[in-house]
Length: 289
Ligand SMILES: [Ca+2]
Ligand SMILES: [Ca+2]
Image (cartoon, rainbow, N blue to C red; front, side, top):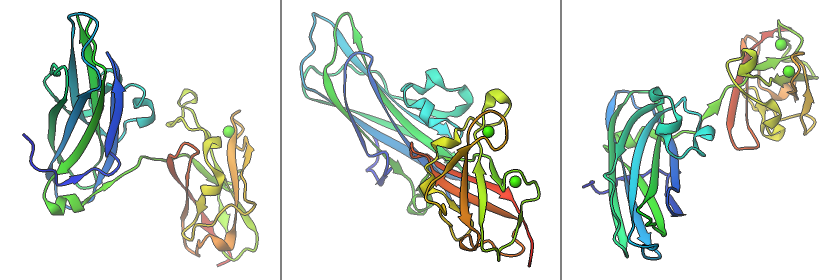
């Protein structure tokens, strides 16, 4: 059995779903480990399954399967979510660990609890996901009509927990400060605006990332150490690199960026309409200093 939960993964919380044969739920939470030494951490969960009706349709039965996965931080969570059972959709290298609860035949009424536990080492700087799935299987015509909840938690020493923080996946699109210019000369004293493009890229065209820059919410994007916001309150969609797809061009008041003489790069950070964090960096060469 599991130890008493020490803390719950915040975003993991509780997943509730009604499931019938073959249907599933998947809960995912990202973490980043900021401790200074490798530590062993246990992720646990408790799957609770409560019937709202008895087994029906003849003499069949239903089983539950519950699993907790440890997934690498390179997993595309957006692609994973519809998949539900990670072992069928992810390359083996993305699954760092999995704990499978024994299939259980639920009682015809009442609550069934399945403990899940997965222990592993985390290294400083590791980012990873913990995913938990539940699935019902029907046998010989049986089916389970039930409500489920899934609660997971971390079980580790307090100093380890303090070094674990929920992490969201950050996508790094290609940024082009002053599109059309390679030197990206930047005069921190300028009264004007500086254009910054977030480029749309596609792996089909040989880029390293599939990214649609027009999905970025222009009003969330900040540029430079001081986080300048779009000067016109909107983005401009344009194919700035001439590759046939539409990129997002933003303008920022130079003096609001906080970029100083001697800086050699500058970054933008923002959020897509789907809630995905993005961050990108391009080189600059300060002039007029
Ligand atoms: Ca440029
Ligand atoms: Ca383009």
